[in-house]
Length: 206
Image (cartoon, helix red, strand yellow):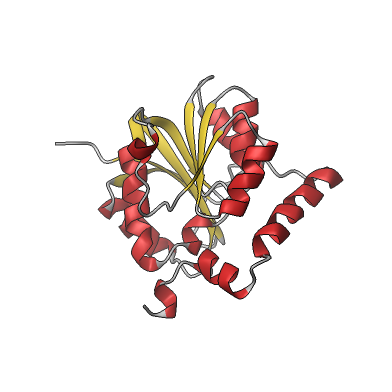
């Protein structure tokens, strides 16, 4: 396997085994300072009816899914890093947290068969996936969406995942754009945007 086709988060953990704890501590410190660490969650909450089913894909230590659960949604969070999942379980017990890989995730194996109204994938998660993992992960999002559901995916330019390549991967996975934004606070996407927030829906069936 070449370096480009390796999961970047796993690579970082192999190089720096304490990276997970650094990441957890970073967001704890930001929260203690009063920094806004749930902006993405507020945007997703505004898109969701009360009590929606929300999948937090690449949930980390639960900063987004935890907030969404606290305001009344039914949240399932998934991350491949067991240390991050342990932190999410400890700090945000109102949600359900699963340690698994987005590219191979089978939610039914956890007894989760009901689809989701919204899927949020923030924190540049898509850019950490190996190139071979991106389409399977996006296809999993499409399968997990309820009728009329939406996936909201955000990541930055120049992080190894070209925006045009993302749109092609999304289309191949059965997702089409509903809205393109340049920030989580709803500024429009332009050709000069260095960040993309993509709101996608499932491709309509025949």
